Length: 113
Image (cartoon, rainbow, N blue to C red; front, side, top):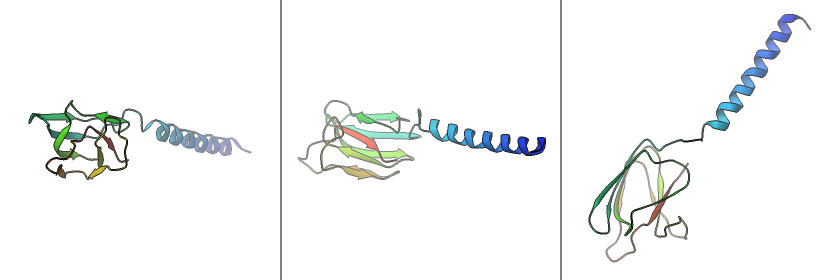
């Protein structure tokens, strides 16, 4: 192999390693970019800005009865504080939802990614 071939091989290997490094770290610290605005069970408006995309997020004590997703990521709302349970409400980006009268408020949410 000539010096030029070694250089090309080195550049190609470096490009592959850089691609893997960027892909592996891209999920670290990502945020949803935008705000989530909701009304708590005691009629107080709460706003969360740029929450992390990963993990389960708890809402204020008393939960949420009305929520607007102003982020760039869809989300699922849960009636439990740990994002568990069969029944989750899907709220797409830029949409809102209100719970039915007498229903249990949402207690947590998770982003769909």
